[in-house]
Image (tube, rainbow, N blue to C red; front, top):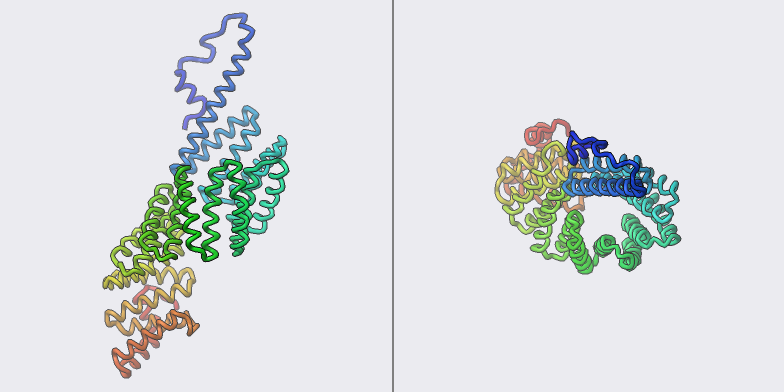
Length: 452
């Protein structure tokens, strides 16, 4: 990246120094004023370029490079003693950490510096904006009490200094806190208070966000049709704003709501659209979950090949250096993928998917999902007449699900009865005795896991 000196050399040529063309002496009296004005214009132009470049890089997902440009802008502002500008750049850096990079702790450190400057320069009207972003960071960290305390502080201060945009932000944030506590009706009330405030402030992005949040509250209340209506309105607003990242999350929740309303074709379409936008905006977790959502619906509709294609895409997105970030998602996808292969009669592929899922769930201590995976693997073994292995899977799954009334426990009992009827009582008893006495070795043969 070229520094300021390098850019000037490109613009003016390496052989032309600042003193190459000296003004006539004595200079015109207005010369100094023109010189100052030119410096101000150059500074503003350079700052705009740095900001636009940083924003473009962030849109492309190159966040580290975006931060470098913001940092260069910060140094430029420091040289020009533009402290108000520094506070705004620090806000942009904090937002990059928080909303793009998922680093709320780093964002909080930067916001604290911005807040200090706001207070030093007595920017009372801008102070609630920084406090709001700090509250957002606490909310993302799951520190709901601290977030709510700050949102209330923002609300009081915003009303005092007549910062209507910050007031709308605070009302919306308090709704988020209420929703996180499971108080959906209270959250809806906060959102409905925030919406007209944000409209009066002409905060278009804020209006879109609150409309989306109203949909989330309706979903939590089980009001699916109202949720769908709100998500559709939010989607239209976010498309007008060309906010592709937000559009992806809106499509994802619209897909979930559509599935709840049994509109499965719509749900699959929205999940696919969400996955594509998430890929474009480099949101891998959202992409994976959207592909998984579409695949799970297709599996439930017994469209095995479509489900396999979607779930394999999801699994592929989790491969590579960042695969460890998707431990839970990977287990979920492998469970459904094994079921899809089983439905398609592809028993070898089903066994591989289930076994990989077992290893992952065992390593992470996810007992319930491990039981589900073992149950699925047991079905595959039974379908291939490998009854000892099937029984070992069923018996170990039973150990992990002690609640006899649970759906999974009942399903295991059903498979055991079916197997008993299929092979007869005498053979079943002999197979069961062998499976119990050799359970660890049988499971090791299937999954590669040594300790049970």
